[in-house]
Image 1 (tube, each protein chain N blue to C red):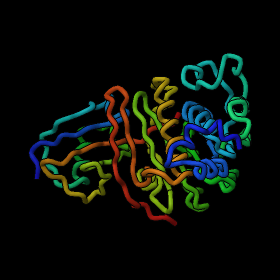
Image 2 (cartoon, rainbow over the protein chains, first blue to last red):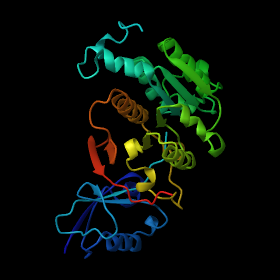
Image 3 (cartoon, each protein chain N blue to C red):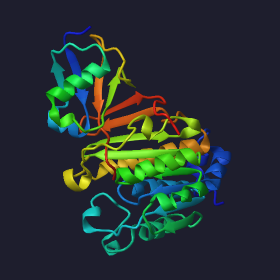
Length: 79
Length: 238
């Protein structure tokens, strides 16, 4: 259960969407979070990204709660 | 072995003479002698790694010099693997340096079998997935580094059967992921990233510290933030 999601973004998602965003959306799982984000930010479609919940890379069924620390991590190229 | 050269790290109780011998007996393959490869090569050669292989068929271009600091103006137009090889051979004549003036592709990836540890200093996803899959087959740990503008990622994959890059990103993104040629990069960023990769390499060789296996280190040099994210096997290996 959650009322407000606080999300940190990295890499090019940070430039496109913002370094930290606050969303008043209701989601209970990572799968729902992904669907919500991809609907809201069309740019995220086709980009692989990781969702970390409380500093652990989370599977789609992972539960999101009010105090979940959420991070979105896209792949980086090289150097 | 010239122990005076390595005195300051032999003095570390965690390394000592035995650790130094391990470093001398180790072989490391550095794939890509660009922004990440340059610092990794410098510190591994200086540390006394016995055998270092360098894979790169690119030539040094002027736009490389801002961050690929082992090359000078007189390196322009020369092959990177050969130029980097000369540099580290001069830095440490005790290191055996092997040059591979080609790009790592599926048909030559078995090269990694000859080495204990592989360092991914590539600038593209194609090579990264080839390396990932072959390292699993050949049971080789590899040290990943990647960058974006002011941010970096480092991890150690397939270490003692640990998770791999495909456990993070099972497949290549359909959309293009920008690289430093398109979005730019602060010169010190690949320097820091390559040094973190070299650090993991020395830790694996000497058996000290905590290895970034099952952990993705993500850092942002603008914000001075370092975060570590844990991950596990998720991808079905065939």
